[in-house]
Image 1 (cartoon, helix red, strand yellow):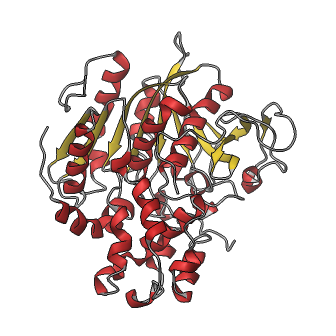
Image 2: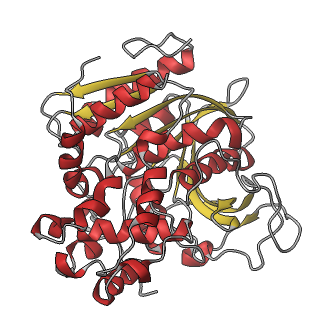
Image 3: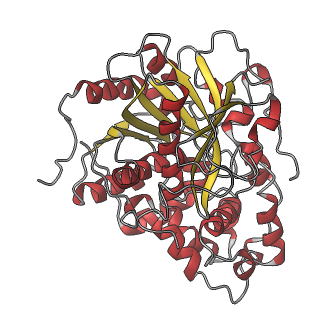
Length: 448
């Protein structure tokens, strides 16, 4: 394992690149990573219509409790079109991981020809206010399930925005990663089921997306693995989780929460490609109120929105000026390109003069990637041309010091987005090794 060393000052300095590299990089790969809002053939994904975070040791409020409404019914065939995403009202009394509805997945922007056996599903999970419905994609291998069922890889996607219609199943990007030659397609060819959550508040309306909240990203991921078994009983309980950028952050938090939230699942490892980190420093950057913060106002406003969706102590109206608050409100209906590329307030006119940054700082720190507690091995591929590289080198040292087993592998010449392609073969080999029960090599040694 090679480290490139980063002092605390370097970490803070490089955190200003988070927007451009970790969350909003252009030309990113398809395996759970951040992507342009452009589909194959030059088609544009549809624009969205105008419409204190607990630590991993905290128990979920009610991980097995039923939700409000009628008793849990059998899963139904879902309607076509956007009506699929409208949740039952009232929600049925179903445990997290229960399948509510399903239908074949073939987004308008993509040809269904050549897609694997893939279904759009709605399932129950746990949100900031209790039971909530979420959407996602379940793809099944064409080969018969082996004894014990197909293993599952949960692929967590990168930043697409925080609006309901920014979900990857709605835009068609969930299908892009399943095309021939992509990592997820190769997993299916090897007899591994693949699931892709839209996260809470994306896809299914009615709940705001708790952006970069580790706990609720983990719950949505784990509950989709549970729901996949209801889609097909051939889906087993052995799983891995992968993700790139924001999805890498979600993947690491999924591993952190799995032992207590979904102990029946057998998590074998995590592939976190260039995971998003350092965002906890963004409030301090914006508080400088100078031109340095100008390119990063959009990400900061989304961070405030996401933290407020999960933590009532974070109140955007007490932090942001009226102009900044208007942009933050718009982020709930616009997707990535509009939010980041739109007109932003001047850096000196983002924070109220008397803004108390304590709650937002606390919320972001609680969900920082460094806070995860890991009991399963991690493969962390990182492009050495990505400004995030020193941050994730430092992250690896921090996690290793806590007893985790992390293999940090730099890829020469690879940018933030390029790493998904550069690391594809290594990631597939690492996943196979974990499923085969091979010992982990090249990682820091876990504590006895």
